[in-house]
Length: 471
Image (cartoon, rainbow, N blue to C red; front, side, top):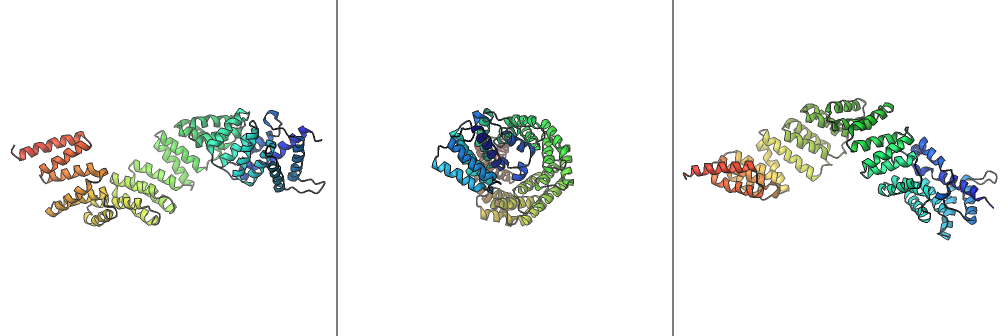
């Protein structure tokens, strides 16, 4: 008869060996992650026998397990070659014949599936192992790791917590627990878990990066910067870490340092569209408009398949700030680079911006076809209706006023633009000295959206109207 302790030790060895690939995390390739010293060290520790967290085996199960071990390792003496697929089939056949067989069989099957990269079945059998033997520590822990790989962070969080209750307190468990907390928005808990993981093994960069992220998400910028600077000593060309540091300094309202850091990333030749937009936004906020334009244009050219929405927003900001030359160039670049990637919404937004810029720079007549096109595509485009109304009103002719009143009236029927259209229409009437027409429009504004400055304006118009009527 095979000694129970010998079988248990052998079981531990085969289970850990088969489960090697199960420790791959999502931020590295399987081989790279497994080759890390802290991962191998964790698995080596699991060779120890822990009777309270391991299921027992019957004599019959011990015999079957010995055969499975032989299938996995091979036997030079008899010429038997390793065959893990055969070993897996033997375990599955045993479970099919007796679903209540030892949880160790479920665990072995789970590890074999994990090694194959079959996360769904790996999780299935890890979970079935823990259902049979709830304190099966390695099944709980490995199941949690597989759930991290599959992006099921809430479920993994629950399993890691249970694994810690059962005695797991290694650097990988605590580090991946931190990763789960980060991905579920629990940044304070993530910070605690990562700090514990780093205490257990301060050489693992992944945990340091995770700690920095959890600190920055809590707006603990100075602490986050200190961690990032420590990592950058060993990895000075990591553009992601430099960009994170730049964002942290921006959080501290230190734009000068943030800009300097992003310039380092740029000089390293590792700029991304995101980092270039970051620079453009900083320079635009400081009214260095030509420099901002340069970075935005470089970002656009870098990847024609990127989402153009961020650049449409940039064009909107430039137009609102009155930097029409730069806005015009950005709009042109957007239309050229993202011809087939612009949504209807973005196309309409760009048309409106072109219209606004044209009106503001004296190109009114050229803008009319754009505005009419906008209204043709959307008869309830309040902004286009209002721009047409104001353009016609500014002509100062009878025909212009007549057209303006039609567009003003249509604009007031668009709820989102009603108040602005009423105010603009009233001012148009005041400029024509038709005070009696302006008063009810302003009164309607005060009913819909009372505003002190409009109330004062209404009082002035009333006084002028009374005086003009000789009352």
